[in-house]
Length: 481
Image (cartoon, rainbow, N blue to C red; front, top):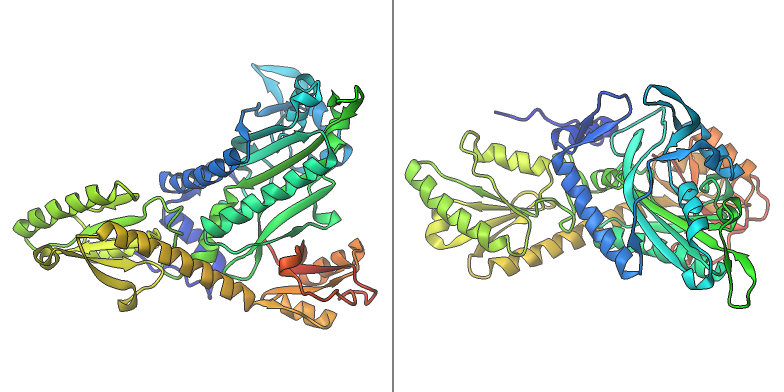
C-alpha cells in the first residue's frame, strides 16, 4: 500500500493545498456546490482552536450565547451600509411548511442585526452595560468562487458582540479583542501576524473602523485571519438600543463585533505545510504524539505492543496521544501517513528499543536524522513536553523569517507591481480609494492593512506609491485569499 505523491508546493500550490485537505481527511466536498463537510480530524483541530479562543474570551469577561440562524429580512434593511454590503451574499428563505412566508428570512451571514434587536429589549440602564457576548456557530454567505476552509458558502466561526456606555470603552474593546486574536495566532498556532486597520473600502459593512490580523501564506499571498470591528452607534441607532445613563439622560450604546472562522485552518495548512503534507502546530494538533510500534514476528509484536500501550497510558496524562497498532500496513506506510497528517512527534519503538528501555522521537518539522533523538522511558514525559515547545518555537521562527524576507519597500509604482508577484509591498498611500482601486485593477493586489506602529517604519511615509501626492499612511499591499 503506497500513497500517491502530493503535488509540490512550488509547482502547484493551489492543488497541493486541495490534496492535503482531502488526503489528510480534514474536509471533503459536500453535495451542495460550495459547501464542505468537516471530517473528524479537521473538526478536532477546530475544537482545539475553539478551546484556546474560548479560554481567552472568558478570561476577558465574555459569555457565550446562541442566537437564531434565521433573521427577518427587514432587519438587514435598517442599517443601509450593512444591507448593501451583504445583499449579494444573502441566502433567503421564502417558503416554510409548504407555504410562502409573510416575510422572507435571511440565513445568518452575521448576527449584528438579530443581536441588536434583542439588545433593544434587554438594555435599559447604564447598569446593564457593558454587555460582552460571544457566539459559536455557522453562517452562510453565497460565495461564487469557493475553496475548502478558505471560502465556502457555509462556514463555522465565533462572533463576539459587545455593547458599551462610551465610545472609549467600545474602541478599547475592539483593539483588545484584536490583540487576543494576535496572541492566539502567535502562541497557539505559531503564525506571525501583522495587526492593523483596514481602509475604508476594505472595512466591514456597517463598521466605523475595522481592524485585522494579516498572515502571509506559503505562496506569499495574504490571508485575513481575524477581524475586529468598531461599529460606533450605527447599529444602536438602527435598532434603537438606548440606555438611561447615571445623569438620567437617554443615550445610544456603542457596539463592537469581532470574528475568527474555520478559514484559520486554511492558514495553518498554508503557513506550516510542506511537500509531505500538513505540519501542525503542537498546541492545536488533534494528535500531538503518535506511537508507531515496529516488529517482525508475532513474539516481537506482543512484546512491543505491551510496552507501546504502557507508554501511551503514561503520555496520555499530559498529551493527546494515538497508538497506531494497525497490523495490515508497514511501519513505512504509517510514517508517511502520519507525516501527511502533520502529527508533531512520532514515537517509534521496536524490539531493540524495548531491550534498552528507550524510544525514538522523530519531529515532523525537521525530517531526517537531525529531527530524531533517542530518549529513555524515564523522563519521557518531560522530553516530549520540551520537544513540543521546541517545535512550536521553530515553526514560529521559520514562518516569521519567511515573511520578513518577502516584505519589500518599492520605490516606484512599477516596482510595486513586480513586488506583489513575489511578496508584500509596504508603501506610502495617500488615503484615496482611487489609488487603491488602481492597484487592484493593474496588479490584482489589495490594501491589506495600515499596520500598527510596531510593524511600520519609524519615519513617516513621504509620497503615495500610486499618485505621488503626499502620503498619509504606510500600507501593506498584496495578493490575497
